[in-house]
Length: 374
Image: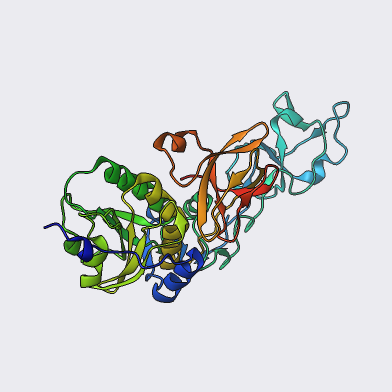
């Protein structure tokens, strides 16, 4: 059934991006942490400290390949006056140091003559040795609650024998508002799954063709991301459907592209409705959606940005926050597209910049913060 013009969903006003994020912060609570193995915890926010149970290593180990020696025996050693190494033993990196040894002499620092090892240079006590407790002390904190787990943290956990951690990794169900196949919406959904996983969430794939009420009742989801149906077109009903099921807190954001973005609560969980246009869906997720995910994750949505010089001026409309794709050149970053972002511009872009609502744009030579595209 097609809605008459007077019954179509409408945007009454565009809310400032800062106000949308503030509304989310007031309504969205962090999810409960789950005990996850390292492979499933990447990017999540720790719900409690990761603590090393016992010191590592438990005994001194060789740090390099060579000869385990007593350093005192090498004090006066040189190539012209080698020092005999009584009791010296070949040793590989990672092996326990033999009793009575306190250093590892590199292999090229030892000569073997008539079956007797001789030092060709002196070593100091501790040289080439990983001392007991050097990697971690007993009850030492590896990573604190509230911090995100990085790949390097997971490597450290595995090396230290830590098999799991309590992590907030929100499960977001991603679906489309319309039940029929839509290549653009499908592309946006696939991109969202990858972006959410990279940002510490767990994307859940909706059943193909599922109706929105069914999508918004997913029992295993901590939140929902729906693509399409947010405008004022004849077949746009996503916002009115959300209003029937729960509440609509925002419909219309002063963001370009992404003006028709909506946000609300469905079945006590946050629901983000993104425009069906690929560029608008991506922009709205980068600026608004990451804030929702960060709130669910119990962390920050801040990401590292590099500073660059704008190679060409870019104009903006006052009152609208604008996302602009940029490409790096020898002269700085070059604006590629704004307002409408052609699909190929994403392939040409090296990142994006944000022009705040109070600005009319940036002149050539301005310093801008460039953020990476997922």
